[in-house]
Amino acid sequence: MARNNGNNRDFSHLSKLHPCLSKDAHSNFGRIHLPVSPACNIQCRFCKRDCNNKEDRPGVASGILAPKDAVETIRKALELCPQITVVGIAGPGDTLATTHAIETFKLVDEVYPELIKCMSTNGLLLYKYARELYEAGVDTITVTVNAVDPYIQSRITSYIAYDGKIYFGEEAAKILIRNQLKGITVMSKLGVIIKVNSVLIPGINDDHIEEIAKTVKEAGAELYNIIPLIPQHDLSHIPAPTCEQLDRARILSEKHIEVFRHCKHCRADACGIPGKEDLSSKLYGSHLNLETFSHG
Ligand code: CLF
Ligand code: SF4
Image 1 (tube, rainbow, N blue to C red):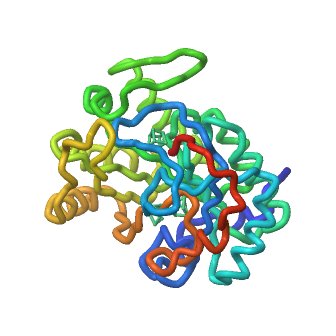
Image 2 (cartoon, rainbow, N blue to C red; image 1 turned 180 degrees about the vertical axis):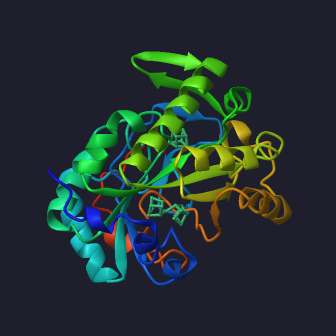
């Protein structure tokens, strides 16, 4: 299907309406996350994917939504929060490890062409699905890039599953970085707005953030978001970065790319205006099939 709101895909237009692209939009507009993506194709050492109603962090959702239920879910979400302008898919696994996200965006774009479609991914398969995502109406993509140096990346991601094989260490890291940058370039050339997220991990990539910012800008990203490590899983022994460490990384990155500073570290099923009441329990309640799965 051809794009039906392609003319709107420019940064200055989208940033007025997308809560994760500008400070002003952040407190005035909402997003709904559809937790349709259960599996992941890499293992980040800090990632503990989970399914519960208590924690407010990425990688957690109350359950998995079927793509066929997305349109009805959005209808209810708009009733609860008419300020929603963005339909996002951010996990709880990687959005491209299964076809659920693309399938969902296609269904949503048919009924709600005016809503901004936003997806976050680890970027391993982004270049492969670039054209399909574009055709499915995706306007903005967040790629999580935690290093552009294979040694540093190998300390953050333990393995990747790619083209039917499992890769470890620096071999895995090289493939991941190459694919992420290629995905950013291909998507940005299609006119899709790219934001990059990096998890700031003290002692591992804290002195490397500026290099990431510079590299992803050159690849085609428009905006950069540095998020603090939540110490858990294999990196539970590393303390979360201090405000000073985050500030320093943001100031250095700003030399190369616009930095977004208002991120609320949303769950994969978040709903509403970021930082205000989260409506996900009203929206999803207990109708989702609660089961343990993995996030993205
Ligand atoms: Fe969702 Fe992410 Fe799209 Fe926003 S969240 S997929 S870009 S619509 Fe926003 Fe939440 Fe921060 Fe993400 S506040 S975690 S930056
Ligand atoms: Fe990493 Fe996201 Fe996959 Fe977790 S779900 S292992 S954070 S890419």
